[in-house]
Image 1 (cartoon, chains in turn orange, green):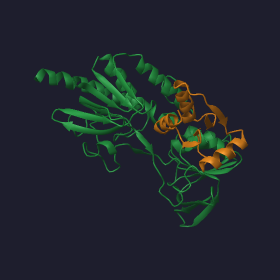
Image 2 (cartoon, each protein chain N blue to C red):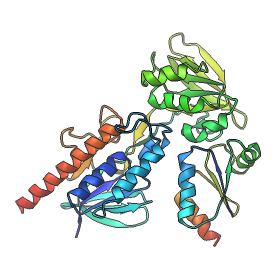
Image 3 (spheres, rainbow over the protein chains, first blue to last red):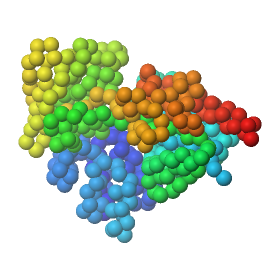
Image 4 (cartoon, each protein chain N blue to C red):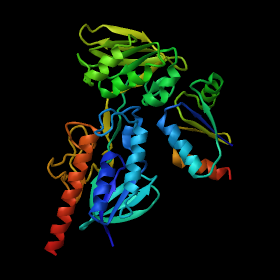
Length: 77
Length: 310
């Protein structure tokens, strides 16, 4: 399961979502701008507040890091 | 068969170069991690000629689409160049995925990236209140007081991105006057939320788990002061991404590639550079595009004259 924590205008969040779409990977998006529960969850999991934060089956990736995403997806195939 | 030209970098300069290389039907390859360069961090660009207003990400998409409309140019996306080596009259380029390519000429348009403050607490609190991408992280500062470091255009834009969220925005400028465009400064000052602090040298960022305060010295009085802020947005400019070529071409004291400003040749025959990575006076999208185009046209002339020699 892929989760992505975003804010509305963050370019790297959009790039990450497009990357998942291109790879045919389904994801759930949590916009932390207006969702305090999601924001808390994101800070707890990643230990920081910057977006995007991506969770791939428990693996936390901070930022849009294509190589880390590929690796986590590969490991969870 | 080696390439005639390899362009490294997919910001506005690299894309412009790619389009001109394609139209000249050069055997060319463009290698980039992403398209758009640092302009994708801009929420709203109002000085890109022909567009009253466009977001950095939209601009990046238009640039990429324009480039991809030319089948003449090869594109390798998603990798970084890890090595450039000169081999006789050719250059061998290696990418982060292990691919290698040979080329007669190289154009470097790798731009620059965020400069760090290098003060106590900056690294420790990165992502925990210290941010570099205002358009990404400004929404996390809802109902909070924040500081923006730097009064240049990127600092003023960070303040603008924060206006809908933060209750109070301090802009700390090291000199006695912010260097950003007066039109942006006027707009953000009109909000009544912004306080400009000049002659301010940031000393320390601190807090428990997240940022709680910032300390600075007033350079006129020598007095050290504290601001209670939950966020510090660092916008003190950019440093050139020139590590890759530091042993190949001459750099200036700030690490920028020294170029001839008519031809955009570097100190190494066969390597050109354009855009923010060079010792240009003005770091702007429009001139970066123009410089890159002049570089490609000069490369085209160079390749022709080399052919005539043989």
